[in-house]
Image (cartoon, rainbow, N blue to C red):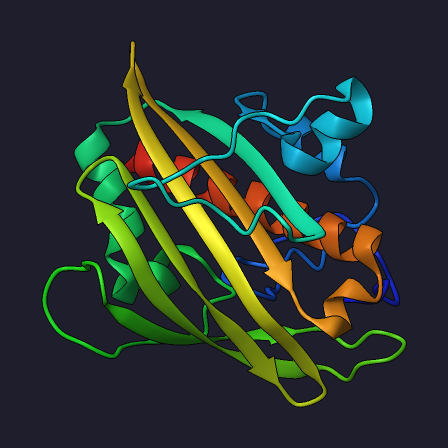
Length: 226
């Protein structure tokens, strides 16, 4: 992930992931290209907005906590989903069912029981492609829920570790706001670690592509829900 993929191409039916997101092996041509595939998705968080306007939007938070604002790799985006909040929230927080609508999630295991809540942990795996300096590997991701407000927001963090590839920590915040006709879903994430920080622009592009793809899948699944 800290390196350019050997053969960049557009997203197809299968994509891969790095930290806490489906890493779209399909998309390094342009982060903006991800949003053009879905007119309801607006890119541009901390990285892109600053580059184009010089203004950083206020960080997303859950119960007052946000991403690591000192992180050099971070991305923010949002989408409108024409579905009930209960449907979207249910899909998003029923992590054990992620593999049914996110192909890159190859296994998922809750490390506790009951509804997802503060203190919950879940461990999942996802493939990561080979790059010029890292081998193809399977990442094991351990996510710990730090904050959760029912139907409103969730924030989790944790590492992603594979053979020859490591993301030391990442923080991921999600906000859900009911608006006319549906729900505005906003998300912001950061990565930290020497390996990914060795190539900030590439890592940020992958992070952005993955978040855009995640939102696209969440939108499609929620809007198709009966």
